[in-house]
Length: 177
Image (cartoon, rainbow, N blue to C red):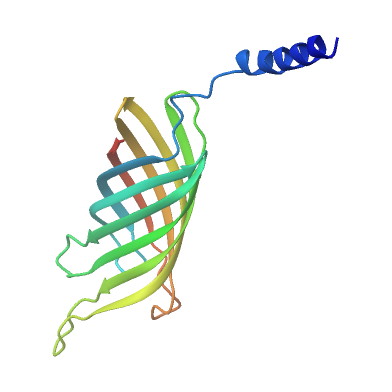
């Protein structure tokens, strides 16, 4: 009787492991995309819009949460020699709805501003710390290609005359790994 009971217990324990669910084989631990685009900015320093380019990367290390790094270079086309160059990194949160992935971001970085030349003085470029907030949407065009529309508000710290607060719009594309 004891032997029958032990055989029954061991078979009952083995049955739960035989009927167990398999682990997912296609799970992803991280998500990366690298891209670039056209940027147009409204600077506080010059009255017209200034245009240029951008490069960025997104690395999502857990579902919906990751980091973003950006580089922007925009220059005044009116001959004033004014340009703004920024390097930023920060956190981002996104959701996915079919082909659309809207996101929000908060960033910290460094900006270089090139001041125009004045009579008797050469132009100067100075670096400032900055904070930025923004958001946008990625649209999956193909399996490995995303299109992006992005808005960003920057606040340059320590800039003369109560700071610099440009707004930037970027339209671009990224390769999604």
